[in-house]
Length: 166
Length: 425
Image 1: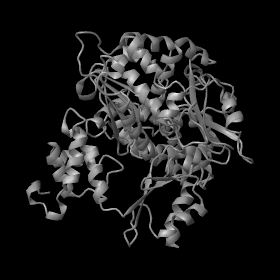
Image 2 (image 1 turned 90 degrees about the horizontal axis):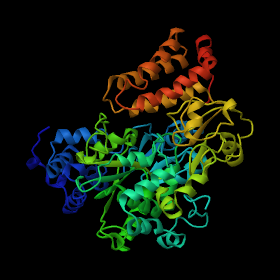
Image 3 (image 1 turned 180 degrees about the vertical axis):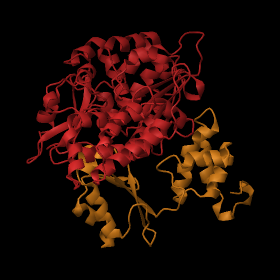
Image 4 (image 1 turned 90 degrees about the vertical axis):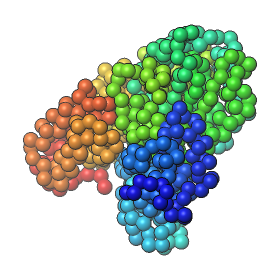
């Protein structure tokens, strides 16, 4: 990729708000680069995913090379380097949820939304992703829609959560 | 006080507010520590209590702290880090502590930081725990307001800044040195030890990393004293522990019980026993990376030494129950898929060995297994075992596999003679 942040389109420029939030996080560490993960999450909060343009600008703010930052961005499960829908569904597939019906939950979601794992609905509303143990195993099976945790998920709950998608 | 860790958690309220926390002696432990004791005395108190790490390794906390350089010639920049990256499958205890009684953790952090004279502290919180992040942020702000954090805490000469860092996924961040790399904004590859974090940790400065539950014990040990803590355990270990169970039990959950409570008591009296129509086949006593135990072990005490003597690890103390309708081979496949995808990729045995284990198990289940594959799997448990990899992820992954081969060999062999999958889903 062209590494210069100077060639970035206007709409892709980080806002003053984003920059302020990133700088605030950076002040918590001995080196600015310590805030790389928070910075990626901040930009993702506003734009849903981290594009190359976003990446270049964040890297410049934090004194990192875009390659180094991309290495960080692609390491973590919750940083998206591809567009995702307005809402991200994270479906736990680890051992306790697997034992108690995670596969049925996934199938139930796929049926209602018409997408499989890693896919986004045509209207861009939902992306469905698998996730590892969400730490609520006593209420398996469990899933998250954005930052909301749904537990003891069954057909009835799926009906309610996706009621405008029948 | 029998259940110090969960005494403020009540079903009629969402969580314990600062007022709720103060009502039951909150921040008295901190007050005693910074106004009546010096840092080394706090360390000695924790050493005397016999507190062991609650994150899975069970290392004596006071001893861990003792390697941090102290005194006039010690570095002034030191860090206290809380490992709140709870991602061990089957584990859900730290979530409860953070969501329902956030000030307990905050007070514990300040005490632990004072013990090692840390200049700053971080909570490394897994990104998916949004509610914990919200409650901890609020609690930290309240603590600053009250003078428990910031400059000259409670009028003493000790100052501390506390930062909340939320992560972005990846199980390996729970490994102490990988966590430090992640906190430095890098990929979460582990580091070689030595040097140990106490000498060269975050940004190369002396650092202590402790688990959430471990730190939550500190206010009470300071408040009630180390002897009180010692008397709470009924086995070889001191204090209480959050024990849990998930799987096909009647009442999955988490309960604060004395260290040394038997597996049978947790399973039958608290988890309500197996669901109707299901029988116990085995269990992982402390999360995904522990060896299987079987019904003959039900009367073993849940403390670090007793479970080790039975051939497993107490780990996080949250048990995953294997019922007789679930195929152990498929369960191990699910676990192996988890470990394989969470490998950081740094060292060859883990990065290349774990996917190979997954392929071997999947082939076996699909009817394409060969008899020698079982020997191959056993060999993997040694190639990926302790001492051959850069960190403990792969050896942990091998624990359920090696113990399943030991206790459930006939289930593996069934796939060799009957290609049809005989399992759960």
